[in-house]
Image (cartoon, rainbow, N blue to C red; front, side, top):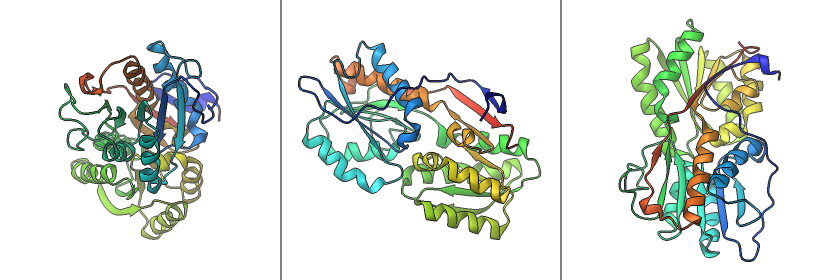
Length: 309
């Protein structure tokens, strides 16, 4: 899709990088990186993570090895995956843009440093004791995609003012994000003059198809898609279904818009990958997770696919 087919407000494009093979080389610390995204999304996000490592003087392949795990919605893999990383005593577990991954890591180890980026309050999630002094073995970045529901709804209403009856799609396997999103959407909608007509749930490819069948049957005016790595990995499927059914949809991640979705508004996720890289590199240099304050991302991007519009 051509660059002029998009409006992008606020955000830097991350450089594309090749995917590193899974390997642990003798004498180099090993970082286990787990995210809900797909390998196809790797260049943008890996480039940002590696940039963060570089900012602390580390170069992947030279003085640190990174092992990548792309969940693509298969959250049931997490317990075994985390147990394996802990058994092999990796130096750091990084879980950028994966709240469920951070929770799984925290449940598995209290000693190996964890660097997260999560959408919900990390204190309420039980990941840290406080933002300024996390304590324990976890720290990272708190970004606000789950808490931007009112803004996303307002932007959707401004762009498609005739859309009043809204359907909300969440991934029940990503429970903490789903719960936060539903709470925020249900609180925000009445003040904007919108009705939450139906709540849809999908954790598989087939369930996304089924959700759109329900959406067409109930004749909702627009679709609000919750933040979720699996939903990002299915960007082409979402673009195909929304185009087929002519349903305007708002997403949290710009990858969905690049594939053909109407609009997205949310934190610059690539920049949170960079920040996770910075903290990972700092820990490799000797910093303690307990002493690194949790950062709060305030860099947002609003993207519209003009061709879809």
